[in-house]
Length: 211
Ligand code: TMP
Image (cartoon, rainbow, N blue to C red; front, side, top):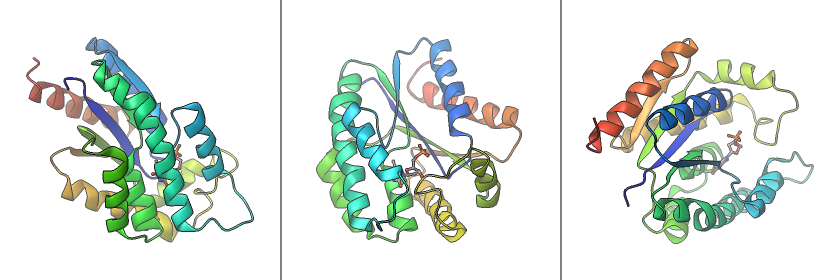
């Protein structure tokens, strides 16, 4: 497939929305046809699953139910949006993907990574992102920013320990998958963050044979 699959990851409050808008303008400038989407979500059904996952509730959501709901939404999203786009030579820019499952359900909830590997293989076959930009920020700074955004969702209600594990998890995923990961220091001024993102995108694009 010539079209590429780019994902953006990070803990709460790293500035994903602003920086995804920046990536969209980079794609437009390079006249690359793309769809922008997100997980959990991305189709009407998967967005309903997202609502189920994010809504704070009194009933404790067991980790295996959370994990299976993530992959249920992903199966729908992958088959209805991501694969059709890639097959039509359209790039996909996705706000989170399976690395978030390794980070949040694997490291955060401490679920077995072998189980996640199995589900990933069942749901995705050999589809993996081509480039993953990890926006990295110390947890305290991110949580402060996220707290300014109003009512916390079910994940945002977690304690700092949980997010420390998620962040460490992301950094170890970046280390293990250094062929496709670029870690961006998102604690800098926005301009510095975006300079680094543009550099990562330019380098990736050049590696595909473009000038
Ligand atoms: P968002 O805040 O980036 O929109 O994502 C919603 C939440 O879902 C966020 O707290 C991370 C969480 N999440 C997981 O726990 N596992 C996953 O596989 C994905 C995609 C998201």
